[in-house]
Length: 213
Ligand code: SF4
Image (cartoon, rainbow, N blue to C red; front, side, top):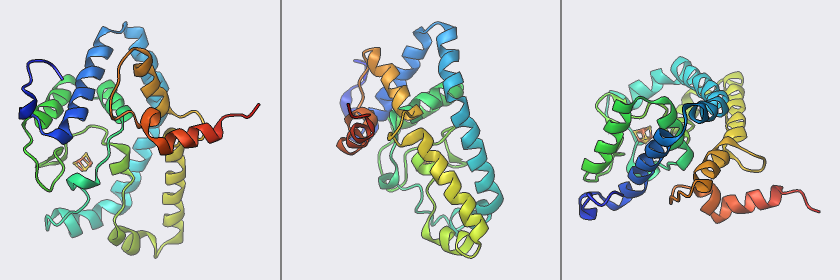
């Protein structure tokens, strides 16, 4: 956090993501353009995957979500306690979103005063361009039961997307989310959001996947 921030003005839960946005933006701004392009090139397959998930959500789930939650404003999806942001979510957002959006996200975190709903939930929906992966892959029980359970083919397509998600986020093999954290760690940056290098559970998964000599 910059020294110009009186710590007391940013609520505790927003400090780590705010610091991560600032760190990533600053670091990317200092890299030569070809290195930023290289990070985008490595992330592009993930963006393609996210497009496919979004298409699936738009085609099969947006109707039920709009009816059940958005219109009635009863949504439980975007509550504050339900969200987890990985450092790599922040890196991907900074690689693909424009400066205005990153400014908006930082301002939102600075000005947020807490409450039940997620800080990033604006009047038109999520403020992220590429929302955190945990949010993207979350389906409530109602959506599961009313849309996916009655249609095994559709359910199979969703399960397939879920298993493809693991190719980017489950470190029993080299995965993008771990790799992006590593890039910033090697450059001397640290963040509580670097779960792939800090979470005992994920570290165990990584250790188990190491080839034994
Ligand atoms: S980040 Fe976006 S999608 Fe995730 S809980 Fe917050 S508003 Fe909802």
